[in-house]
Amino acid sequence: MKLIDLSNDAWQPAAPEDAAPPAHSHALLTLAQWKAVRDGWPLDLPVGVALANTDEVGDLAADVHRLALVVLDFPKWTDGRAYSQARLLRARLRFAGELRATGQVLVDMLPLLQRTGFDAASLRSDQSLVAARRALSFFPGHYQADPLTPAPLFARHAA
Image 1 (cartoon, rainbow, N blue to C red):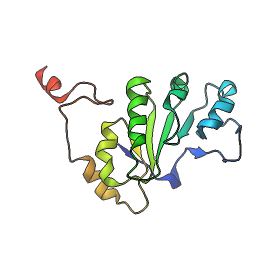
Image 2: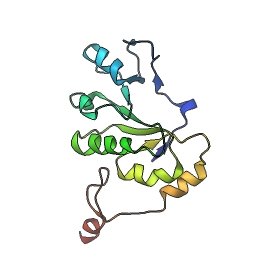
Image 3: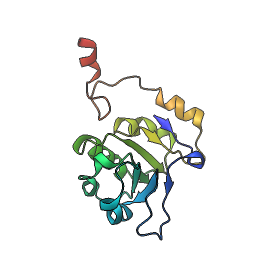
């Protein structure tokens, strides 16, 4: 899992007041902004969409092949709706781009984030990168499949 430092991130959010932001590489749009510009967005420009945990993932169904990044928000670490959104994006919609967790992301959440399909996270500012890397090494494998590892551990060893 990639740990993202937002101060050095190539993906920059469009201004919230810009309902139809101009097309540029690595633009990070809200769902409403994406809906306003998707028909005219150049196919060769990487674009990302940031979803609130109240947004419907199904609204991206026709566009997942065009998106390089989807950012899912954890407004509180106790609110797990973004886990479900991630699972739907990976398993049902077959989203293959970067899936990033942001907001109140704690080190303790990283193994479950990884299991539900996230491949990147931006930690809350008070969280330790050393502890985060250690947390990601706690479970070297799982018996159950997940969105990023479709073959369960026992099936990989049986071959």
